Image (cartoon, rainbow, N blue to C red):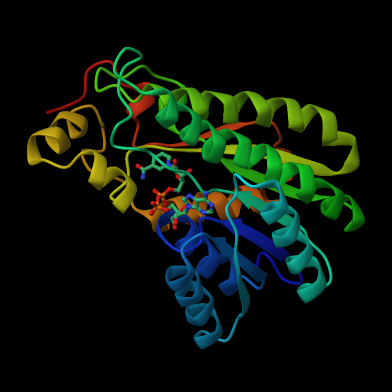
Length: 257
Ligand code: NAD
């Protein structure tokens, strides 16, 4: 087992990548604090882990709120005795997110608050806990859109994910000598609720698929395996990395038909 005796906090754990990662990390031996705004989904994740014989708690928290982030870390530490892994994964993509002209300021602010400030707040309260544990691993979920411009605009989302990459690199450098590794997971387009709501017609889906060399959307379970690699000692010599699990989309100029 890759995460035996480890304690992991995962945000956005009620669905998608976060849920799959919570279940996988627990199966690999970690005690999991599953954090989300969505109470029903978060409780379901924790229940699934317990049914599989693992250890998990659900903590309801909004990652854009400082008091919530402080409490989620405190709860994980008091329940399981320490924190070794912090997976800042919660994120939103709002349907009104468009180009700079059409995007309203509230859409920009909400997106930045969850996707970028949420990662900063997770680190603000999580890093002292990792220090108390003698070090650990942070994984921040960014996106392939932090690397490429898209003609289907989502300007606030793209900017927020660029921020996640930039702050991941700086955190990695600052905390390297404290035995804390920090890496960014950059998923490609996935068949999750988040993206399928945004690509809500067959035409929009096909328009995206045409750019992916592997010819299909990725699965949350595939991202969970990549997150496990970054969270475990398997990636012990990696920090500050932009880890792409994107079906080849960022490597392609023209894709095979
Ligand atoms: P998802 O919508 O299935 O899951 C996201 C989870 O985050 C949900 O359970 C939601 O309730 C939770 N959440 C949203 N706002 C929150 C907040 N303020 N506080 C706490 N929890 C909150 O989406 P997913 O695809 O699993 O996305 C996970 C991460 O992966 C996100 O950061 C997303 O931007 C990123 N990502 C997704 C794709 C994709 O194609 N789906 C691609 C690249 C990156």
